[in-house]
Length: 291
Image 1 (cartoon, rainbow, N blue to C red):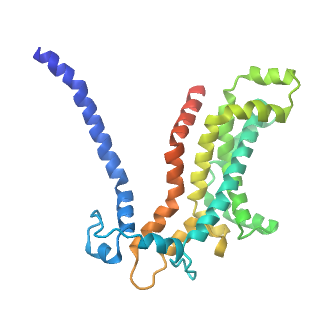
Image 2 (image 1 turned 90 degrees about the horizontal axis):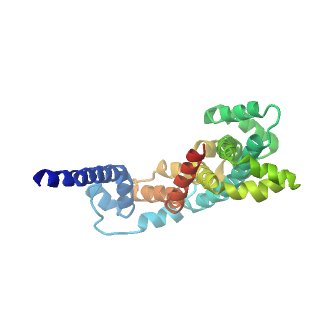
Image 3 (image 1 turned 135 degrees about the vertical axis):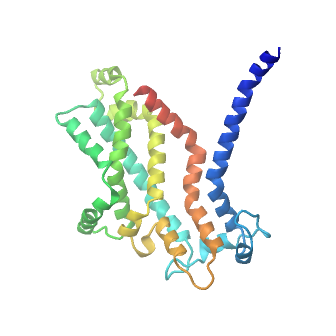
C-alpha cells in the first residue's frame, strides 16, 4: 500500500516541479519589465532613494504624461506622441503591402511553376540572410533617385522590399501543401490567375497570414537602423525618438520618463502578441504539420 501511495504521488511531484520551474523562469524573464513599469510610476526622488524592485511610495503618472507630451527628443520638446503616429502611419501600409505581395509571390512560385521559378525562389531565400547594413548605401541611392529620401513613404518602401523575402518564404512553403486538385478543378471551370488567388487560395491562407502579419508588424515597429538612416526630423519613427529621448539630458536624469517612453514604444507589439499570440502559434503549428 505504501509503495502504491508513493507511486501515485510521483506524477504529482513531477508536475509540481515542472510548474515551479516554469514560474521561476517566467518571473526571471519578466523581471526587467517589472522594474521598468515600477520605475515609470515613481517620482524622481523615489527613484533616487528607493530600491529598483520596491513599490512606489506614491503612484504618479508624471513620467507618462511628460514622455507622451513634453519630453525632449533632441531639440524638440513635444514628447513622443508625434513619432508614435509616424510609426503607425509607416507600419500599417508596410505590413499590408509586404504581406499581400508575399502571398502573391508564394502563390506564383508554388502553384504556377515557370522556367526559372526555383532559381528565383533561391535568390529570394538568399535575401533573408542579407544583413541590414549591406543594403543601406544602395537603398539610400535608390530612394534619392525616386525622390523619397527622408520620407515616410521611402521608409515604407524599404520595409516592404526587405520584408518581401520573408513573407514570400512563409506563403510559398504554406501553399506547397495545398491540394493541387483544387487549383486544377478551378482552371477547368475557367477560373483565371487572380480569380483562383482571391477566391480560393487567399481564403485558405488564414493561419499563415496571421503569422506573417505578426512577424512583419513586430519587425517593422521595432526597427531602429532603417528608421535612423532613412528618415529625418519629424518623419522619424518611434524607436529613433526613444533613442533621442534617452540620450537627451538637461539637469537631473528622469528615469521615470525614459521608462514610460520605453513602455509606450513596446505597447503595440505587446498588445499584438497578447491578442493574436495564439493565432501565431496555431499558424506555425499548421505550417509544420502540413509541411
